[in-house]
Amino acid sequence: MGSLGRVLILVEEGFEDMEYFVPYYRLIEEGFTVDTASTRIRVIFGKHGYTAKPQILTKDVEPGEYNGLIIPGGKSPGKLRLDMHTLRVTRDIMVSGRIVATVCHGPQVLISAGVLKGRRITCHPSIKDDVMLAGASYIDQPVVVDKNLISSRKSEDLPYFCRELVRALKGLNSK
Amino acid sequence: MGSLGRVLILVEEGFEDMEYFVPYYRLIEEGFTVDTASTRIRVIFGKHGYTAKPQILTKDVEPGEYNGLIIPGGKSPGKLRLDMHTLRVTRDIMVSGRIVATVCHGPQVLISAGVLKGRRITCHPSIKDDVMLAGASYIDQPVVVDKNLISSRKSEDLPYFCRELVRALKGLNSK
Image (tube, rainbow over all chains, first blue to last red; front, side, top):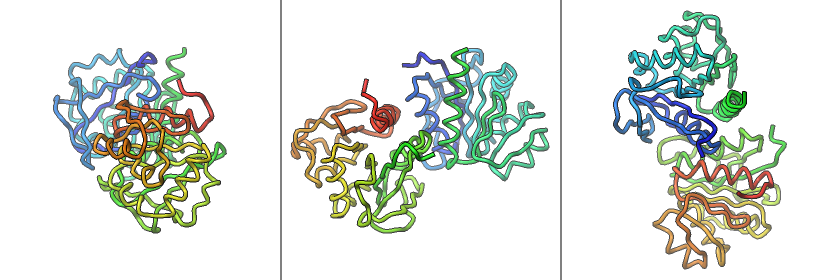
């Protein structure tokens, strides 16, 4: 297992539990290696009390090692966007054309990384004005795929999010 | 969508949230139709506060309509095993050789349905004595596949559970 490639998930306190664990488990099922990064190494609690255990600090992440980046929603992206290492990693993976996938409030990190100009994206409706001010087009549908950028609105969209995520990550790998 | 077939999930109050939603979303992703049944039609709360919304009463379930049955863990199976319609549906699907999949405390329903004699299964360690007294062999591994019966121990096993579940429902051979 793990031979398909390596994917990074960024989390902070208050992440949306399903939006972390559903893609996390899905990629493990598929055979990817999945690393969880945060700003400190400790147990992190999701909104519903599940726990994530980061193995790597954002400051130590080598973005070139990853085929893709996932940013789950909840309160986590509002904290991650203040971390310069999160923004460095996000910018590197986004600009290189490798997969970037967000759910719910995840695009807050993309706004702060300054990588949304001219892109099509969906997100939680409460931040749609923010993504548009950052230069993106907001589309209200379960999943939006714009080249290397995959986005969904909420937990209920996760089946469609995971379908596109797996498809994209396997396509990237097979080139 | 939904053309692959129909799968039933049984839940009651206190279901383990991930063990319901991870396979539920996974099967929707794959294109199955997934029905949720319970003893009453109302919003049901998981241990972590997520909610399931059953569309069908167990007393109205026609087991012949389903390719498979999933019984998530948590406190839900301890309530479901008291419902004669749950036991009727479980027995029908199990005996017919269609897929039955349990996580954690899910096998409590199989014990009460009287369908475990001679079968190999895994479960939460706290009920391993019960499954053995019901005539099953208990195996401590992430997923156990014994013909039409697929079982896992806990949420962390879900990637391996889902892999075998999808494979079995699509009629593919295990490993």
